[in-house]
Length: 372
Image 1 (cartoon, rainbow, N blue to C red):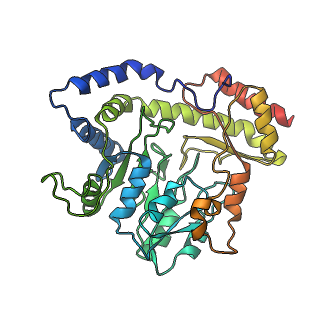
Image 2: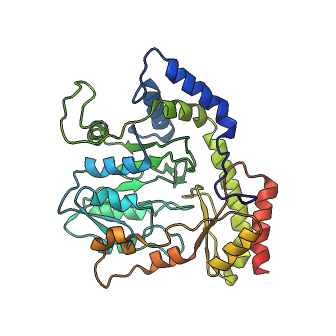
Image 3: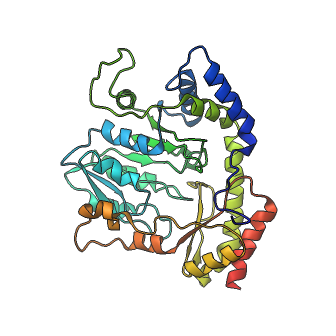
């Protein structure tokens, strides 16, 4: 393992006792309810209050949240949903699994998020929704995305899986779309010891439908009465209890990530003429799940960092429409140059919150030293 791994094995070391306490508490609770119990409801309420969302519905994963959001909008065969060409695959699989067509829009070659202009060009009379996704360090341009979509009466699913805690123009991530989704996957900013996610919405009807869909189409009142074909995307009580205990420290962990990102961006700004593009500076519309550079000599820099025992990571080395799984949705002759550039040049470096100042400085020094 690298001296400074990209994903550390001790993300929850400080929470070890909290996890043991929650396991004992849930396991010995007379209620003996291990899914969708009072802890899940309490976490939903805590996140509702902290985000200002009308409803928060806990589910099994971030992928599950997207699956529920797409189905809640009634997407099905014959429909299209515009998704980013450079992103994690659930933005496309959540659409394809319902028999609908993911239509891939290109991304901005600097920010790596969906290009609103190409998204607009991708809309047709079959478009049932658009699904922008926040990526790495930057939220999508939600004001432009929303205007384009809502002017046409098209709902927006905001994939905020990597962006919990980010804020754009005073509005938290997850609140921009008609439906938003967070992920609690282990390495996310509000990651957990297992899987989990939530759907956020201000629409009461959509919230009620998502709640039914996550539990096999049942309404929570009459068991084994299925109002529609749903999914099993229920939330775990141990995870809920653990997340409740950790939520109070989330702001501090997020601030630490933001400070590291600020430092990196300042240090790497002089490298712009050497083929290194850092995320745009500032805090507005920024998320700090991953700090990813765009590097012309990515392979060489990555090898150098490995020599320095610094872990790094390449995300999505093949754009989604060029993946075998989605080949049928890639029109012949269509290209996605922004997505291809991002795939070919992104390199993420460590940004986990318990990095020491000395480790952060060593990482930045090592990157800069390579170009010296």
